[in-house]
Amino acid sequence: MLLVAPIDAGALGSMLAGLTNTLTLALLRGWVSSKPVILIPGMTVSEWDHPLSARQLEEINRFWPWIRIVQPVLWKSNGPEDLTPLPWDGLQDLHRSLEKGFNLPPWERPFSQSATSAKATPSSQTIPSLAKPSGSDTATALRQLQTHWPNPETRVRSLPFEIWLNIFEDQLGDWEIAKAVGIPTNLPVPQEWQSHLLKMSTPASLEYTILRGSFAAMKKRIDSLPRWKPLSDLACHLIVKFSRTDILSYLTENHLDLLWTTSRLTNIPYRASAIYGNPTVLTWWRDAPALPNKEYAADAMDGASRAGFIHVLDWWLHSGLPLRYSERALESASAEGRVAVLDWWKAASANAPIHRPIPLKVGKSVLLAAQSGRIASLAWWDASGIPYSHAENVTRIASTHGHVHVLDFWYRLKGPKMIFDNQVLVGPTKNGHDHVLQWWKDCGLRVEFKTCDIEEALEDAVSGADGRVRRWWECNGLNLGVGTREWMKTKVL
Image (cartoon, rainbow, N blue to C red; front, side):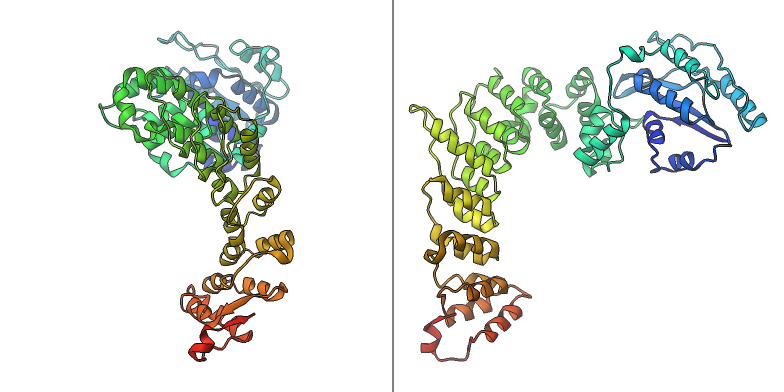
């Protein structure tokens, strides 16, 4: 016989999903079905009352007939930091189940659960009695469960647990979101959360309260903080990530000192725009009466462009606030290959009213696209009709960073009229890009160089690459042992 006590809601769901990531789950998965198993659930009242628990018990009745479940051990939650155990009247039921299990190994006889209800608790909640019939008598168990849980027909339909598990583990892969909505997953706990996991013996931290607790519990935790002590980076991260504008409002109304001493909350426009892409927090910041100063730096819109947050750029466009941005907006979008962002800026500029123009600050967008190897951005700029500068340096930048595909694209675009100088061989020589040197040799263009420039580049070549490019130059006719006049002479590759 196997006795598991207590088994929490997460382990129960993991068992039904067939997971084996703990010793207990591995035992349950590999247990011989001819030998009995007794499970004693242990969870909070709210978890036990949840319709998913009834559904899990029904599944055990149908597909795990060798498992018997006795009356659960429950805790009443007075807040994330306060769990009170309720009286447990399941000892007699457990004793009866053990007796029957040892006397009848095949579990041929149904057993009845003690009908004794749990004693009244301060919360006026009782633990529902649970019968575990054998064989096909599932309907009996369901009728007993339905005395405590709503009728399945009146419940809101939900996706199967396996699909939720796939969504949160395989698609989102975000432990914080899964934890916030109460989906048990096998996602690893992030390092920054190791010290904040809930323990029965210690109160919940502010961070865990923000993630899982009620607003009342959160206020209680904030009220207990010392004055002028800034909130942790993790707490600020959760507030903005989960759009907790209620917490922000509470801070501005009751603990403005905490807000001003927390650096990550004093620059909300940037963090909400560039890092989290959260217009909800931006709207709160704009409309918050306790924050009359609506000044912000250009890095907010620049960062949104870099991250590809078009919905944030739309928010700024319609926010009624002056638009502040720099050349970095288009430069970073080009460097990241954000063609949709480039389209947004072009459309916003074209459709801007005369009294509120939105000039396009091109900067070195083309050069940064070439440096990052973003052909899509280069193609966009060429077809956009927007004047841009630094086109003559595209080949030099692409060569220096080893982007042969950019050179191929630029050559197809410009043809024999492609502009370059004798420095296009210096950068790849210094950085060890012999494949770029070979491209220039094979392209069919007249490429000039000076021995002095190549020798200096070889002397400055990165470690491990100098030998490779030196051999390439030796194979292609470079002679370093020449006189000064020959050394300064322009040659053709």
